[in-house]
Length: 109
Length: 112
Image (tube, rainbow over all chains, first blue to last red; front, side):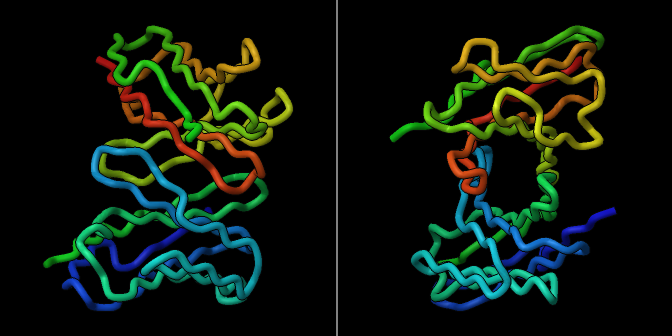
């Protein structure tokens, strides 16, 4: 059974600090996605990573993909309160999408 | 800005009843998806749809589920005989390139 594991599951960080969320997956795939979900809301696409070594950046968030290690990271730089949300990674393997358990991020002023 | 819409926002039904959840994807998109999220849990893929047919479906998407694009704009998910464990938030998504997905606001399904 394919597994997609995120850690940490819960992250509380102070504004201005840096941190990384990790997404490990158990099967071969070169397509990985990051999403943001605010409480009670839908999912918003953040990054689409389609090859080994792919790196994407948007504002204070940067995502990378290492397909050989089956690892993706979401790095947060100088966190601000507006980044508080749950972040999901999702792996596409042969057209089936498997989501991680999510990382609930709280940025404390 | 174009967006995916879903109706109803909340559906309450009795166990064993049929429900149809409706989605209007972004107009020039060709890839459509359904997902569900049980409260507080991870998102689960149900089915993908392209060129008027199912591309992929998960193990969850059994014979009780079906999808349709009845009129070229709507995309529906039907659950024939609902079970208690079908209670969840159901999200529709569409994509123009098969990668970047735009999600609708979701339909909360409550099965009593």
